Length: 405
Image (cartoon, rainbow, N blue to C red; front, side, top):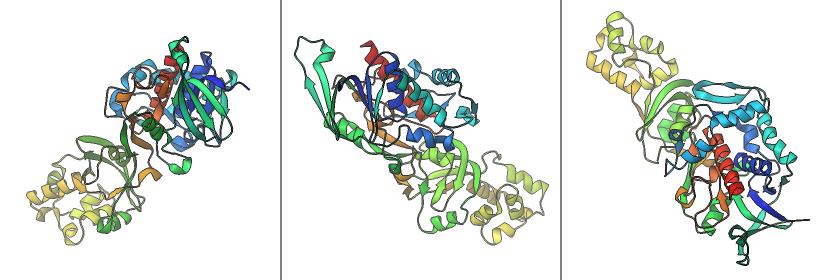
């Protein structure tokens, strides 16, 4: 058996599959390795099994990185509209939800099959349940083409393989029960590349003590809020859980939160700041709790306004007190103890430093022929299909760069 390939890709997730399919269609021989028993596992579970495969409004502002400009080239070369065109060409029915999020009508399996089909058709060799034991780089005689001078040898439990282009698409540390490992960043460090410290992103918050007990009493309740932290604002739903706070708003802001930060939560983002003053004039004899329970769930009102204050009639509350109550509702200050960590995080922040890579090709600047794509790179998207789009765009960029080199 010939164990030499043009490209070896480690990681059969979204980015790895996109790179494999693209490169194979361009005539490259490709070997795809993964330690998992199934390809595209995160694709299959995403979006409740319907895969939020991209976002129609994808732009660089939707990504977090030490270099906010790094993602622009790959996103421009293969955009959300390009992936949508692939989906439509494959005959996959899809629908749009709020904020430009696109989901399969039927199943996430449709997206996985769309990527697997060209891999099968163009002879990609896929080896699952395969652990990589070691990777070495070798230099060949100088009379060869410069690209051929540099070769990688990959040793697995079963065999050894060689290639001139090695693509690392092993993802981040999120959801370890799905098989996430630090393989990619560990390998990058071994090759001398700098790493931005990985942390859990798009992850629920946890609390301790009295705050935890208070929030637990509201578990299961959801409402639309506006949340702020470090100058970033998200207007989405918030969900109270037995551990703390979750829901899209909290997941989004968690990617910017740092230990010790306080969250500012507007529980009534659509309410004018002077609304309670107007209600006092309109309904002077109504109890404050009655008015507030028309705006918020009763359990939440009782948590925020315990005891006698809620029983007070609107006319008995002076304007300054009403302004204070409004501030409490529209600037509720909470300091999380931490997050649920990688166990439930949807993405990993940090990874291979983008200063180590070409933004056009994803190739290492230090090690010719070595590429990093997808979540292993220090580029993380907001919630809503952006992380998949980064996988598609970075995988395509690497495949095209290898083809054109």
